[in-house]
Image (cartoon, rainbow, N blue to C red; front, side):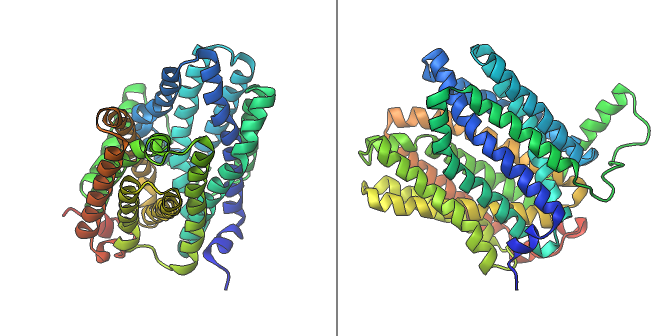
Length: 420
């Protein structure tokens, strides 16, 4: 019998989404490296690089909830195509005017703003393209393709930027978004042509009131659901942990493991190996991921890994631990995506995904700032101990607050959105 991943890829509609996202991620890999290198070359300042990262996070915080309501109201394929074409145009601006730091800042913000609309639309679309039992395989395919692409293309991107500058990388990114839009243009879904909005255009005050009501409905959905509320708390705690530990891994490598850039690259590669393999194994050995152990257990694993990294200064042990960290990150993400897609009603899905994006990015931003202060004041090992504590608390909350019956009780609103 074919695996859920293969069954998902056998569906023409999902194949279009898969290749659209994968190709655009190829371009993202080149662009992400080029952007950091370009900002540093233009400014010579680490602060400028940090500002660029902040400008990529800020649109999620400002626009995330609005993006969710847009995704739930308008045809999702059209939202994605519009975001792709907008991102292609921004990348083109970087090709022509990327030698001005202000333009680069504005482009980083604009690119992230359009991605804020694209991502919840794509996540919400998956269950419409595959059978219910193949959602896990579909998410595994998307995640693994993204990770493998990053591992394979990052060295090529670095070489291209070193030899030819940032402009060719931005041009490739622009082209990748155009290809993605063309692939999505052929993706037809029942009911997508008409959308979910009203037949007549409302006045501006009515439209604003409707958007606010939709945002509030999404927030109420999370507030009145035990599972969604617990997931929000767990996501916030995990973000407060992972933001600092991920950003400061290079500091751990130099100050605690006493290794240079070459071995630091191997540490990153170890995470990538685990992240790439995790979903491929998960979708082969697990038929139904709607179990608390699969949803919250990865936080426990990642917390143990952070403790190991803080306690031991052995490079080989760190490599093995980071493979496990990658496995936990990837299986946890795919499980989380699948659980939400299979249980949250379609009309609410965009707002729920967008809300979790806001929670994650908010926690990540706070974590990076506090982690840097803690590392300088107390030491890098303290950052990882504190990060481990947050993850272990997150796992404990999830495992004790969400019974299996709540996860596997079905996908209807009555069984899912339930006040404790």
